[in-house]
Image (tube, rainbow, N blue to C red; front, top):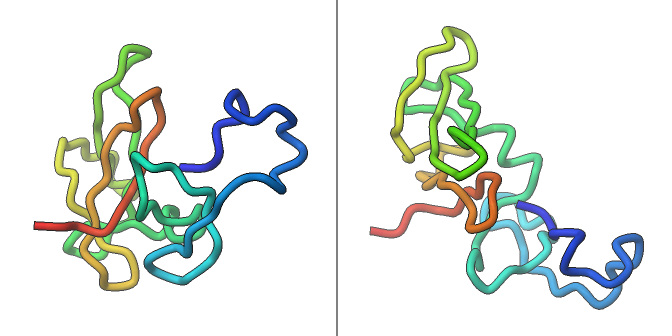
Length: 106
């Protein structure tokens, strides 16, 4: 999840935006208190299932919902668990739409 432009007075100036390190690769990620350990875009794009198959994540409708899709086969499921660089993570719908991934915490 990236910075929501609607919450920044000037979306072209992120100088006042707080960042945290991506928990996978340490790249700076715009920080949201609701998602304090969200991964960066590059790591988000590496998400795969336990068989190493690349996953895509989507909202089901405009009102929300969540689905995961195995990109190679189109197989859909509702499993939130994914792996990025061997790190077990949890993908979920973000509060105002979109998808956010954070390391799994049991």
